[in-house]
Every structure is written in C-alpha cells, then in structure tokens.
Length: 181
Image 1 (cartoon, helix red, strand yellow):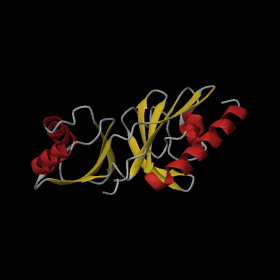
Image 2 (cartoon, one colour):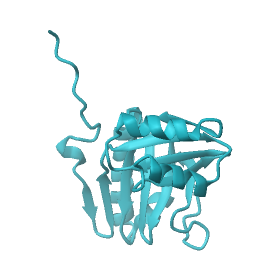
Image 3 (cartoon, helix red, strand yellow):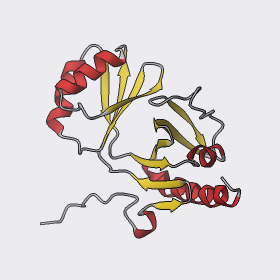
C-alpha cells in the first residue's frame, strides 16, 4: 500500500516562523479554509447561510462583482461545505480554494508604510476602513488585502507565490525599518 501525501503548510519552514521588526510583524496564518462564492447573494444573507453551515467564525471579503472570499482558521469540513453549497443552490456557487491560497498577516504601527512600498492601494483608515478588502498587486503578485484592525492586514495570495510574497514583504520590512518607519 502506498502512503498518501500529507498536507504541509507552504510557509512551514523556520524561515517563515514570523518576522518582528520594530513596528512591523509578519506571520504565516493558519491554512484553514478559503471559499470563493460567486452569485447574486447579499453579504448579510451569505453570513446567515455561513452560520447555519458551521462557518460562523469565518469572515467575508469582497473579491469582485458578486464575488466573495470566505476565510477562516478552521480546517474545512466536507459536510459543512456540502451544506453551504446546498443552501446557496440557485443563488450562488461555492468553490473550495483552501488548497490553492495562503494567508499572511501584516501588523504593527508601520504596517501601512510597509504595504505602501508594494501596492498603490490607499490604506489610510478613512479610505480603507476595517473589514474593507481590495484585489490588487503587491509588486508583481496578485493579492487580496483586507484590513483586519487599526494597524493589521491580511494578505491572501496563490499558494505557489506565497514564498515569493513573504520574501518581498521581509525585504520591504527591512527597507521600511531603514527608512525610519
């Protein structure tokens, strides 16, 4: 009998355990679940269906016209995904993206300075408040940025680009520190 491959988080190495520079913290977030929902459903109705299907701790992030990402730290339970898909039938489609995307946390008083080195999104809290999200580029990589707190953000990137994004963020953190951020 052949052994099946085991899941290994993409940012699991010691090199990715977290970076804490003065005013900046980078951390690999748990590879829980990430669902892509497409359809004519309002976020409030989606939130109600998520709670019924066992995704109450998940957050909803706008990802485009009639598109949302549903992200959470808990591992995906197939029965919950099936229940959500059944509840959304006729209103929206749901696709599991958990295997294909990785989340990285960026926080600290200099987090906006760090991110401004890689993206053109205006991250001022008056323009980009908590809970707001944007699909954008960080350098050459397509990323979703979500403000999760006053000085904290979550970046979601395709799994195959996670190490590259991490390296870019670490380089930008060192540069932001030199700039006196």
